[in-house]
Image 1 (cartoon, one colour):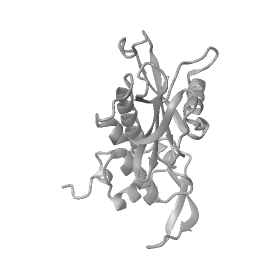
Image 2 (tube, helix red, strand yellow):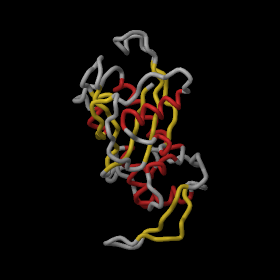
Image 3 (spheres, one colour):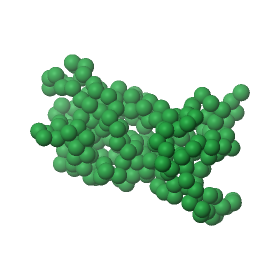
Image 4 (cartoon, one colour):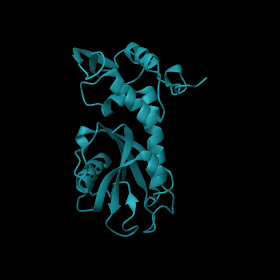
Length: 228
């Protein structure tokens, strides 16, 4: 199984990559992952591999199954099918390479996908699928809040959408949409006082899991600045 782990650091969507410590693809960048052990479920294997290769606690992340990959040529060792998982978390700490990896680092997702950084196996395909799943999830679910340490402001939540979707949003339309989506956000009743500007209301994630109505990338809230 393999893991696509996203966080937002310094305003960028970043993905966790390891440096493989074994053949095949020794020294190559790759997604963290490994083989499922006897007696393990897929989810248990995903949590274990995350801890062994990066020292991150997967119980603190949003974790969901992404897809199964079965191309007969995907692994030079033989016929190996992988099930990939998508994980999302708020400004995660620097990873620590474990026994199965020579190194681990956060990398801007755009750099990992621009072709200049070859990835092992079919991990570029898996990473692209994971990115599209994350973008789609932000349209239809409240999972964007999984990127935000609580409490957070609507501006901070908007920056998550901008980092994942890859373009800027209209602040007023975004605020109107998310505050009218029932169960998405719960106000804490407190405000954060910035160094410059007005105090901003603070929120926590609400009980809803689905966005009704959805917050689509094609809607007015997602129109890039300056667009006609």
